[in-house]
Image 1 (cartoon, helix red, strand yellow):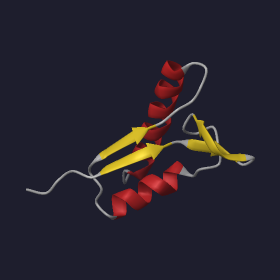
Image 2 (cartoon, helix red, strand yellow):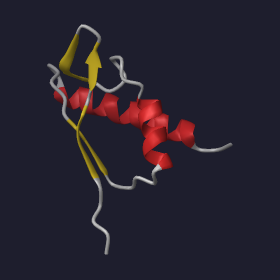
Image 3 (cartoon, rainbow, N blue to C red):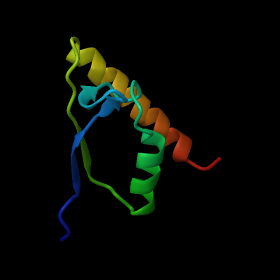
Image 4 (tube, rainbow, N blue to C red):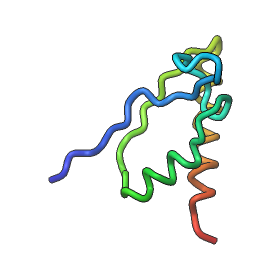
Amino acid sequence: MRAKSHVRHAHDVRADDIRDHRTIGSGIVDFDAVLARLARVSFDGLLELELEEADDEQAAVTSRDHLLGALNRLQPG
């Protein structure tokens, strides 16, 4: 049995501070391209987010929605 892959420490960044941990979709990382690459290598594991926002719960929801949108754009049709 193959172990599941796990991408740790995924977050967005601002151009002026790449050590930042921002909400997915609010910075300069092209997550559509990241997810497309993961799909090309048949990644089927976990993607763990690390966020440092004043409202971490809202940041998680917004990040999830952005990632789901990117995944939907990968679907043919």
